[in-house]
Image (tube, rainbow, N blue to C red; front, side):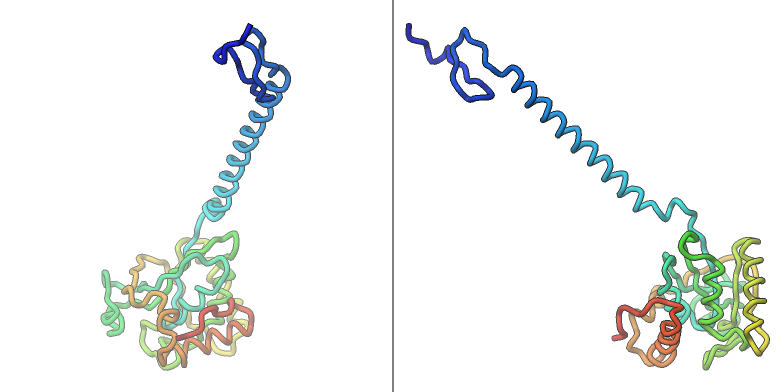
Length: 244
């Protein structure tokens, strides 16, 4: 009797044709194949979950610690900003104004000396990587805290040395740090330590000023030498991008 082609079946394991009345010899081979595929799929699923968890842990490593803020003034904010941008653990540095009485002051108003504000930088940092005490250690080295209302050729109350604390803990740390710095200074330190009432962000063209305008005379003659000195002392990281 000739078997009708439609009565033939294909063995899924061997690929051979079998008769209609004969069951494919899948048996153990078919079961093993399904088990292997299921294992592979499950393994890939676990690997994907693990990868997502690792990525989430890494991306949120900073958020596991509360981000803290320090507000410091030590002369022209272009200088202080450039210094703190080169510290590991510092997340952002914003130039602005604080310590005065005028709401939403402009740069020209602050330069006029009537607002009471100082040029300051507000620093967001990860306390797990760098502490407020360490930020202050850099602060004393980044400017001259013994000159009243002046840093070099920059004169005026807006250039005064000032620490604006966010809470009592920062106040105590700042006072202790100032006393320690005084031990290493021949002249009296005149840095103000006052509560931060409000911070006003400076105009956009002030932000990241040295990195954008490193070729300008002030940056080359004032900021660059300060950075080189701190780099040589290994206080800050080397400047990656050379001034234009």
